Image (cartoon, rainbow over the protein chains, first blue to last red):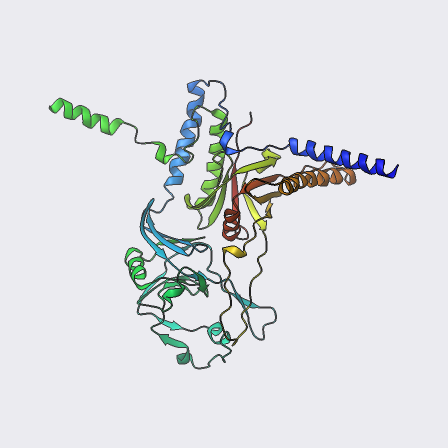
Length: 212
Length: 213
């Protein structure tokens, strides 16, 4: 009797599952019935819809920057300088490692070494930049944070150029070219010398940088 | 000869310059009123997003793609292998991502010898649910070659659970509840990881729906 009840319950459950699945829509692209055209529409009635669609399409296309812009793919560690759809420069990069570092004496506060996502603008263009080491650069090495500001300055580690895009983030050079293509930075975007020079020449203050 | 030149010049300046390349959705049939309405709706929403300095997501169920976009520009495209969905009317509008899969981040041990292993695409989940506001859930399911019975059962299970939640909710409330709009996207495993990487909290999502048959 118990077994009969169990079998019946399993059968009902299975039936319910099948019925549930059949009520949803599954569409595979290989036999997608594309858009099912409505019955032949009067041209006059379609015209306002077509015009509106065209106007909006044009408005969207006009939002594309008219000057070169920078795209950074943090997952694949690539940087592109593009103009409209044309790729003017395709560079291998290094972006944020995503690791975290506790801030000493600040409870649960942490640094998270991500390259920020979204849209930014080139705010500064520097030549022969000097790295002013932030607190985390000392803390992660187990060193004390210096009181003297001069002890934070380090020359020759950022390459020949740097482009700042806000909150201390830069596109700059690197001594560690063997690590290009990997997520190893503290949030900045590293390039080799040649690509960095190319980006510096193509970008100007106000150039959009889109990072994803 | 002069007449020919004049005719050619007239032709060049009067021929409509608007072509397929300016169309936001090149797959759209311009004699499909419903398709046009849907495309127009999506464009109106996308324009609001593209006008601001941000990246956003366009899930195009007609073109079978997920696009990461900024300023109307496609930055990254992910093919959708198949999808299923309910409450399609509630899929319209701009949704904001409020919950996404968590990623285990490694912590630096100050002063320790050796570098900490950085995060990479391989650390991203392949199978997850995204929660959005206004209420909507998107399940991302990886495709596996020759989808096996276990995966098939999992898909049925997800759909069944959704029905159970709706049924249970209607039992215990006086007002009839509306099911949470739910979309399930099947994409390649590496693309599922790529999508998980690209998503950020608060990211805006717009969905282009196929027209009803």
